[in-house]
Amino acid sequence: MYKRVLLKLSGEVFSGEGNKGFVKDRIDYLLGELKTVVEHGVEMGIVIGAGNLFRGAELSALRAKAADQIGMLGTLINAIYLKEILVNNGIKAVAISSNVNSPSFEPHKYDLIERYFATNHVVIFGGGTTLPYFTTDTAAAIRAIEVDADVLIKATKVDGVYNRDPKLYTDANRIGKITFKEAIEKGLKIMDKEAFSLCQRYKKPVIVINFFVPNSLLSAIIGEKTGTLVLPD
Image 1 (tube, one colour):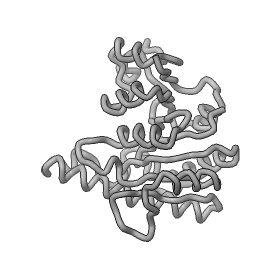
Image 2 (cartoon, helix red, strand yellow):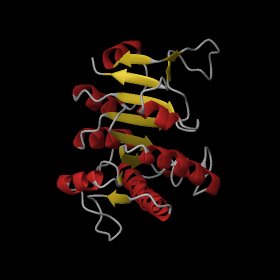
Image 3 (cartoon, helix red, strand yellow):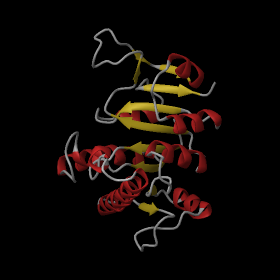
Image 4 (cartoon, one colour):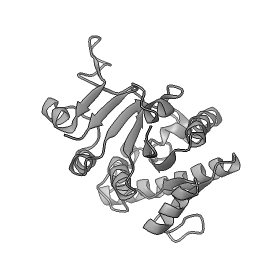
């Protein structure tokens, strides 16, 4: 069982695929999945995207650096929202950011973050990497390394990594376990290149799961055969 995890969530966990905003049944599901993990005593950090608020195609008329700033602001909104719904449901949580001065956020200080983990808070990181041109995948990889998480869990809409696109090929096979080197050799897309490179360099295991399958998060954390495990070389 992993003691400390960094969970990368898409903004779609708030809205459902293809929707916008905050949808109650999706939020109720998210709360249930996170509460189960917290009750097992797992120290959990979260990086969340902003796909429920903004999508890249909608901002394509803007310069990339401006579009990325808007996206990062969206993750701050989602971080506050997630913190509040957790607290309102009896789960201790804190939002952390280094790119805003807001009473809703605590500063990004390592000793402070460690104290929150030690007191059973879910630690939510908002604002991405704080820099344009990087995705929330990269932000999640950086945070996982910073807080010395045992594993980075990427919550997606598919139940792991396949040898070929399962939407196009009926004979596609899910890969249960693979190394970073093997994944690169096979050309498998697991995360963006920057995030993947960081995890490989710092030997941070990655698990890719379908978050929308009930209990898949807890199953991955306690070591059951869920999704795809990417191991250091």
